[in-house]
Image (cartoon, rainbow, N blue to C red):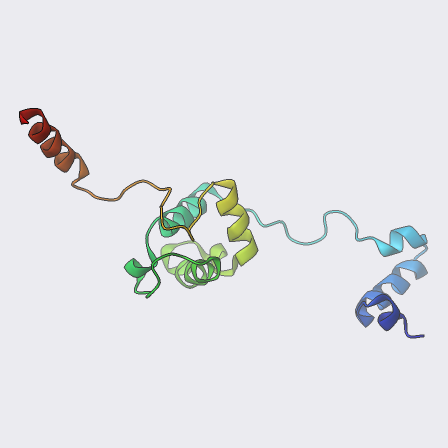
Length: 137
């Protein structure tokens, strides 16, 4: 019986296991990946701030027709604009990484209500005008 079909794995995986076994590794070690394999994706505060700044703005501000961000659309936008904004590492960030980051920040871009600071530059002045008006009533 073909091992790849029986275990529902790729041929490359089987070859990798055999090569590990030939080097003297025991069966259990052959079947497990070594810890620390693969690149650890590290993201810095400035890059997080760029993502937060992007997600806190509506897609329509960037010329998209959508009213709220989907994770895919947000990630594609970050990938396209990151390098031009000085964050070349974010041009390859994945949807799953953006999802984990937003979850850790408790930001839900798919919701109508935004959890980010308001961006109206005249807010303080407007607030004062309303307060003065309400005091006169």
